[in-house]
Image (cartoon, rainbow, N blue to C red):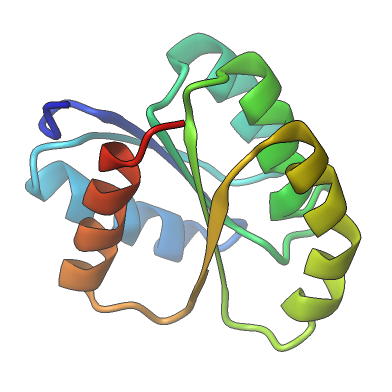
Length: 131
């Protein structure tokens, strides 16, 4: 798979974080887009069908796991990367692990903050793995 121009959808309710990550990916040659809520992410995913979803877990309204499940239904080939800087994430994750497993959905949970080069490497790895 060619990495350049792979579509990445970055979802974070903190605009500055989402936009910074989008800029990092765009400077690395990816077609990166932002969404600032779960609902906006679902709408954009329906239009873009991203190759990679990179979503914060802890957001108001729909959390990152809920976003990932809906995006995966819209775009079955989308790779899922979730990230969080909050300890409460492990409690939220427990409720979704079985659902992801039952549906055969793979995801990776990353900790914030991540160095830009590691973030890019994680996306490259996700793009290489078969879905």
